[in-house]
Image 1 (cartoon, rainbow over the protein chains, first blue to last red):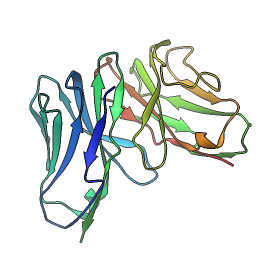
Image 2: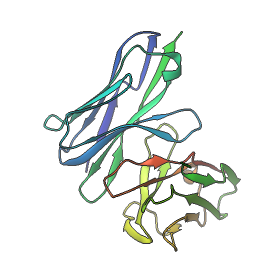
Image 3: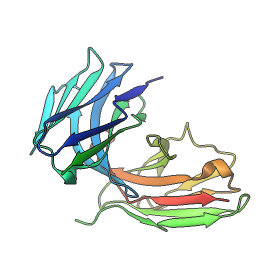
Length: 111
Length: 113
């Protein structure tokens, strides 16, 4: 069974810092990996989707990379802002259409 | 473009009662998912529909949970009877093909007393 781990569980940084969130998965046979953000009491907002054949995806200040062979993905956030404060979740889709989520990293950006 | 709609947003019930949640996906999205998210955990997939057919329900507790998508558009998830451990946020998501990007609704927060 696929296991998805996100480290750290919580992160606090001052505004303007660049930061990296980590996601690791145990089975490299994935179709894609998706990064989400979740604000308190809200649903998930899709940030980036990386297909298994891709190495990275970029959207604005966000860049996600994927290394299937090592079972790792990173989400890079440039020039962090207080509005980036949220929980960030990664999810992998595997054979059989199963989706596995990590437990998330809670990010706080201090003004 | 309208997003995924869910109702109600909040529900409080006593254990052993029944409850139902409704989801309307983004127009044209054939795939619909129901997830359960317990506080402090990532979402867990309960059931996935492709149009009105079930693709995966391996993690759905079928003795108490049921879901349907009769016309291949909106969907209902039911719990009967509810247990304390069912307290969670129930999220609905939709996507185009199986492997495409998922879009989530705001969720329904269920509290079972």
